[in-house]
Length: 83
Image 1 (spheres, rainbow, N blue to C red):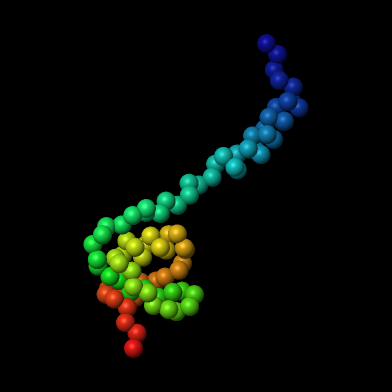
Image 2 (cartoon, one colour; image 1 turned 90 degrees about the vertical axis):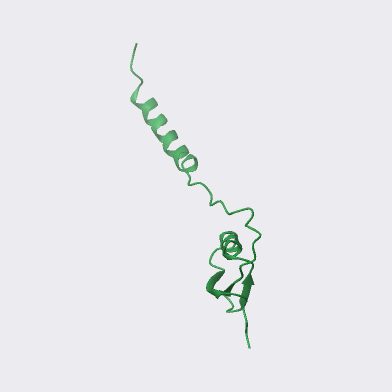
């Protein structure tokens, strides 16, 4: 059995190098599809507008932020109240 010519080996290495970045990707972040239905409100503030928003529970806030990165930051437990 004869060894592969060096040009064939170089071509194979180049093809593998081209294929690798697309096949070795990190898995997409999996956001929760649903949260518990227990009402335990949390108040959060938009990082873009500063508007306060009440989420039904911490899971709902985390779920929203997972789907819309860096949207809201936790402020306090309870319903948001702005005078």
